[in-house]
Length: 185
Image 1 (tube, rainbow, N blue to C red):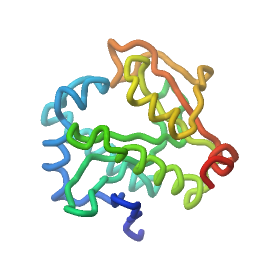
Image 2: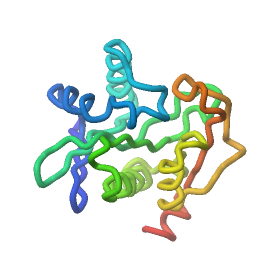
Image 3: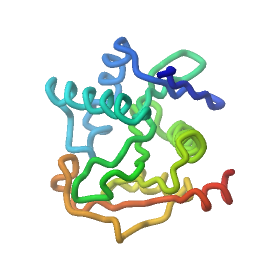
């Protein structure tokens, strides 16, 4: 399988390399970044998360890819596509997700990476609809979903998952190919 690499104006979305993980965890396994994701991970939690991301890539040809800043090669976090694995949720549907380190917040990097991921999902992978998951309290996340043109799908909301315990119901937003094409295509 060819290595995935997609460039935007300021970013590179690409496959993971072994050397990426220490910088990724240092920047993203913080109380602020992990606030809405179940809290900071211990060593076994980080290993399990890495294994899941690598398995998505192996099984489907896509995952939450590394987000690298072009001008200095810094790893800002991840963004990309996987299949929803929450059994109570929209299981199997294409899902977009992102996680960026705090120093990258508020600069449009998440939106830039997410727009690129949606374009790849609808273009290269031919998805008809892509969902995104968060919790009601995570306003920054669902705010970005709306800024991307995603719409609330309360019919797909579900009870707590392994990462959302204590935050209430998982809320779902989605965008379909027609809406994406009319808006951004």
